[in-house]
Image 1 (spheres, helix red, strand yellow):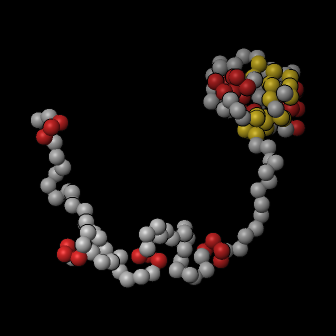
Image 2 (image 1 turned 60 degrees about the vertical axis):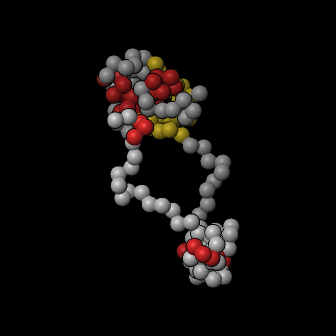
Image 3 (image 1 turned 90 degrees about the horizontal axis):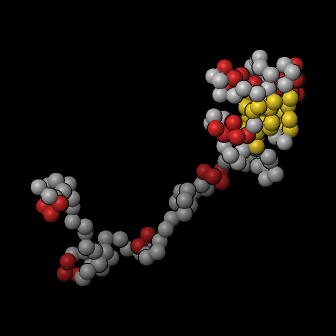
Length: 149
């Protein structure tokens, strides 16, 4: 057996219907599209969500709220995540963007904000774009430094 004699399993393929190839074939004339109307025309495509003229769902449902285009998204990292880095001996004294990226806590293009959930028992120098008040005070209570980039 080789590539030259491979073929699909019997009954798994069908010949496509050759339509619009003359009246003698029995599939000429309207070419199985029925008579007139938008669906019989070439180039017809129904718009997404079209419900046959009934008011479509996306127009029936009320709209509210907005997306602020100036919003700045931060990747939030809690103190317990920093403490687990210390416990696993992944970091000793300084936590910065490179350390967070290397340990999968942030992506290289993320802005990082340190939040105050959990407990920090190590003296660390933490460099991030933003700190919550609780995180900053917890880091400084251990004798560490919270450095805003």
